[in-house]
Image (cartoon, rainbow, N blue to C red; front, side, top):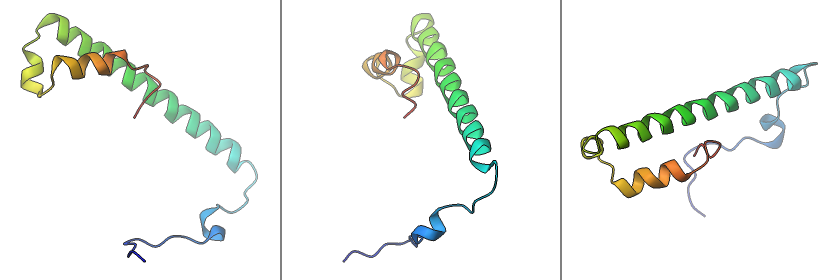
Length: 81
C-alpha cells in the first residue's frame, strides 16, 4: 500500500456543517469565481493573439512555439485548465 503524504478526511469531515443559506452562498461564490476565470482566460487569449499578430518574435521571449499558441487560441475560453 503506497504512503499517502496527506490525511484523507472521513466523509463526515469532508462535508461542511449544515448552515441555512450556506449552499446558496457557496453556489453564488462558485459561479462568480467561474465567470472570473472565464474572463481572465478570454483576456489572456486576446492578448496572446495580439502579440502573435503584432510581433511574432515575442513568442521566442516567452518560450512558446507558434503551434502552442495556436493550440491555446483554438481552445474555447471556458476550458480553463
